[in-house]
Amino acid sequence: MEKSGISRRSFTKASAVASFGILTAATGKAANGKGTIKIGLIGAGGRGTGAVMDCLEGNKDLDLKLVAAADIFEDKLKDPQSGFAKITKHPKVDVKPDMMFSGVDAYKKLLATDVDMIIHATPPYARPDHITAAVDAGKQIFTEKPAGVDPVGVRKFMAAAKKAEEKKLSFVCGTQRRHQQEYVETVKKLQDGAIGDIVAARAYWCGSLPFSHERKEGWSDLEYRLRNWYNQCWTCGDNIVEQHIHNMDVINWVMGGPPVSVFASGGRAWKPTEERYGDIYDNFSCDYEYKNGVFVTSMSRHFNGAAEGVFEWVKGTKGVSDCKDLGEKGTNPYQQEHIDLLASIMGTGPYLNEGVRCAESTMTVIMGRMSAYTGKKYTWEEALNEDLDIVPKDLDFSKSYPVGPVPVPGKKKA
Image (cartoon, rainbow, N blue to C red; front, top):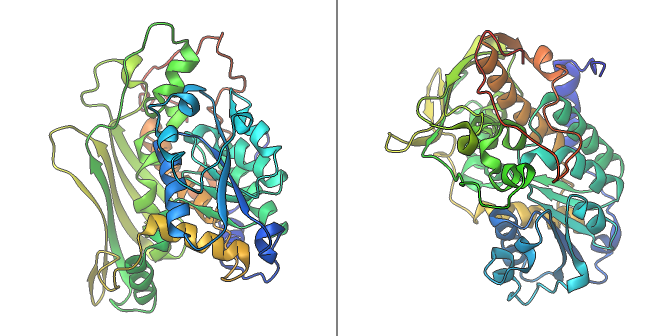
């Protein structure tokens, strides 16, 4: 694939337009207030079902209904013990059997229905293709982060976000700190000079090991990779991408854009087998450089039994801040992001399109991973325009999808 030629300057300009433009026109039933806003869920795991409840509970006074659901695995929808089965008891959930779709192309079947809005919560590998299809289908969008797992996917996601703006589709991403009142008020004050000029920052996501599953009898390679999705780079992007995006998104927010470059290291300290724990690292340490020569220390790791810490911290010429200490506590941000999305859809609040901004923050953490995997320093332009595409093009339960090897700096190309 040819490189896109996207520069940091043009990328940041596109982000500003897509993130902060206020449009007065709205689309669909939601715009004129007539009829129920029909919602479709793509990805019926814990985060997807949680997002549905956040949306419905955060907008109790609105005429909303979940009417369709899709997942690659049928049991996620039909097993009476599943998380999805539990949310069907909610009065605003009414998904008929013929509106439950499973299989690799389940998302396409859902997008062909008359749902007005989607909640997207699949593993990250699927996001660029699914969101592109959702925009083409004219759906309003809530999608979880990150925007993808590689530069090719991020560029595709960003193109979809720009097309959504052209179509005046509302587009909110699951970087919920952007909707958390403490952060919103604090970052505004930081940008207004509350602690002077920012001269340094830290961002940490240091926690314990997330889920990992043993392979069950009868599971094909693809089924195991997708059910154990947090343990392969092509499905999750590695822990720095899947989780640390939250912290680096805040740093990008405070700094007014993505970094200039990154130099990183990382590794795998204790995960014993590639089959269960895949090919991902369990620790990253990144040195990001931002405009005006500001350096940011970034740490992301998964160690059981070790010290934990998830936070952002900035130092200015007149003080320090944890990026939320200068604001008042507000509504649950997991609900607030859906409140803000519905206000955008219905025209009762500012138009929101967070897609390019989410792509920026996703690329920020992907470039950290790329630097750690290879041992190279990456500039923003180099990383963003890298022809790196790690997601298999043909997902087939009858095919082999071997895992590994774990990346070795100096030998890994990207």
